[in-house]
Image (tube, rainbow, N blue to C red; front, side, top):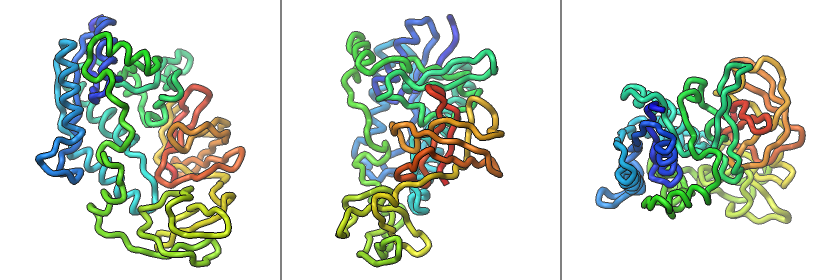
Length: 356
């Protein structure tokens, strides 16, 4: 086997072991890391070493250890536009964005893939926990969940096109984390015990509200009200709150209250009782389908509206302008504008879109 594969090396153990597995299978492998931001982009001093620089060096060490060529692609302008600016704008519009999905869609499986083709590679590979297979009957590539459901990342990959799936390998997609770390240890890779990233990569301290405030200015305070308009208190700026949030709002009441909505027009935070955070349906836009080109009739399936959330039974139906109506079999909790809704048929990803 002589296919040339460019592995997207994040500096983590999953993509590093992907390189080793592909080499063992006889592929002609090189590695590349995407340089996505600088210290200035995320508000750090120039003299500090940010996480992105550490990750680049970890990937470089692994590439040297395994004897493959290594590249660094500077996609910082694209990352700022497609990921950071989108993240800030979505919050300011009252939504809850998912930057990993935007990064995968615009950077890893578009910009990175395009660069790989320009350099003459046949395929790219990533360390994602997901698998793909070709369906002879439909003539389409299908995306499947990882057998390790605790690590499954198919939710953030729903935006992949048929061309991208046809030319993307997921070497660790059918493996469990313990086995991946064992392989890294056996091969003395520098990141064998490196912890998985838990936070948004460009907000290493996790304080997203402070990050947004630095970029867009101080947020306006406003009223916290019940859904009937009764005033309960004053909020610090709507970006500080998420749909379904119970603690940390700063109001007291005779029974537990949850954030049920954000009234952006009147700058009000709407609170309600537990039963008010459930909804029967939603509308999704910017939809991508994998198992077929277009939704033409209602389909019974399951859906996730949050990463690693339990599936919920639903029916998806086509609307005008490519939008999709999702009706849940039972009321669904804490649906947030800006998050992704991803549709499944068992282990297979049907497609997904952005909650409007």
